[in-house]
Structure formats: C-alpha cells, structure tokens
Image (spheres, rainbow, N blue to C red):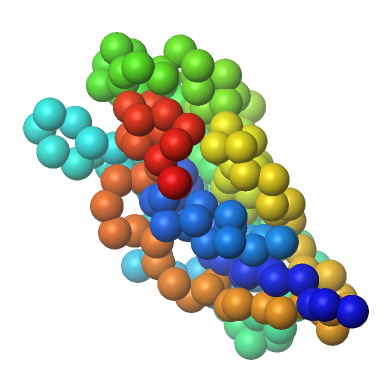
Length: 195
C-alpha cells in the first residue's frame, strides 16, 4: 500500500502563499498547536497586508487561557511544563474586529475579488472569536481559505495516533512570515495565485 503524504505546520494567522502551497502539495495537513509558545513567533497571531504606504500588520491580541490537559503529542512532551500556543486565547483588547474589518475594507474594498472572498474572511473578523483558542482560530481560518483557494487537502489540529501509513514532512518550526499574508494576493489576484 502506497503511503499518503502529510505535512505538519505551525498555527498561522492568514499566512503567506507558501504555507498554502505546502498544504496543497500533500494529502493531509496537521496544524500543531502543541508547539511551545515563543513571543518571537508572531505569525501565529499576526499577518501582513500590503497598502500604498507599505506593509501593515494586523494583529490578534492574545491572553493566556486556562490550561487544558495535554493530548498525546510529541511536541507536548518536548515542551514539558512550558506554555503552548493552544494555551492562548483571543482577547477583546482594542475591539480588534472593528479595526481589522475597517482596515481590510479601506485597503481592499475596491480590489477585484473583495466581494467574492468577503464571505470566507468576514466570519473570522468577528467578536465571537474572543475567548477562543488562537490555534482553533488559525485552523478554522486556514480551512476557510483552503476552500476559497479550491484546495481539497484536509486540515486537522491533531495528529492521528497511527502514522505508519503517512510520509510526514515536519515544517512545524518553519516561519511562513516572509511578506504579505494570503489576503493581499487572494483579494487582488483571485483564485489562481498558487498556480
């Protein structure tokens, strides 16, 4: 039996096209929320959009949430007692959803694909995400953007316990933060950006 390919990725907020290419190149994708929290790894809750004035960062404010029992994961054991990304929730600080929705509408409202992709993006720029895990948010947004890009690779926040039938590529410690996130090319160029 031929092995299926899988990629393990870090949680990312609207990452670059390279992240989505990595998913598209595999049969399965797993977003690892059991990575050790590292303040320098900003792309978990920050993305960039292009504006006439240059790159603009969109940031989801985070707060530490109640720790949950560790699931079986090679990363959780490695992290030990340290905080993991899944221990952080989206904070209501600054009513970010209002600011972010306005920023995207201001810079992309006239973009050729803004109206079409708005339905994929707007549910994530919403107050209903306050208090929920940043990893849950990143996984759900990534899944929605995959649908928008017509990529059928299934994405999950947890690895199966039996991985013998999988050829795994581990990119979980790679930062996909080299330029604007997927929102800019998606809203300005449309669905063919990965071709």
